[in-house]
Amino acid sequence: MSEQTEKFTRRIRSFVKREGRLTKGQAAALERQWPVMGLQHQKALLDFNQSFGREAPLVLEIGFGMGRSLVAMAQADPDANYVGIEVHGPGIGACLMEAEAQQVTNLRVIQHDAVEVLEDCVADASLDKVQIFFPDPWHKKRHHKRRLIQSGFVQLLQRKLKQGGVLHMATDWENYAEHMLEVMQAENGWQNLSATNDFIPRPDSRPLTKFEQRGHRLGHGVWDLQFINQ
Image 1 (cartoon, rainbow, N blue to C red):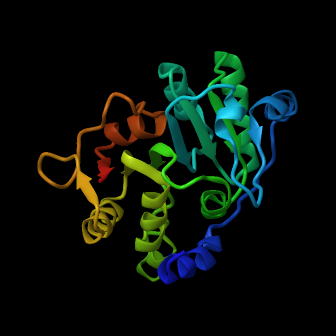
Image 2: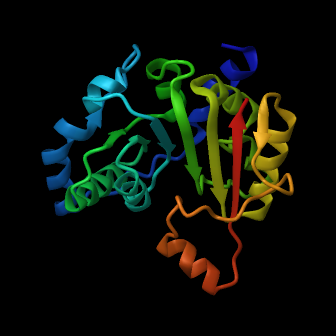
């Protein structure tokens, strides 16, 4: 682990764990589906092929919120294996409830800090795609150091992605979008998939969320970035 990545790893726990309460439906789905779809953080590499019972392209989403769009993506892409990481219990419960309702089987979830999961559980050069959609923007300038997209974290993702693997990010905060672009442009070994070397139109593979639809009606922008690990 590089010194920069190690420093970032020590700092990442600045996220605020707003646990909230599970609804009855979420709690019931968690009880039924966790034994099938839940994966535990461990101090050893996870065998995802064994977890899914097959070998397939592996897509990892970090911070999936309530999981509706993640479930929709997994459902639309049955030939890939999807893993979602989220720290908040209600989000895990909601995701499992939606996956159960949609009869999605190519999805697994982990409730833990993403940096520790990547460091401890994910083999180098094993991921085909990493998705980070609408991470906490920490919009106050004094909090920018808490943003997930930092040089050390990007280096960690690059290590875990296969050559040719894709990092896809999206945010509705223009300042954070500019920050993401600046961080990525400063790193070696990434190719921007934008024709204008900045942002891309939202690809069809990323579902339009209700939150995003509301933002469009209010005139809010959303910025997508995609980079290939060279």
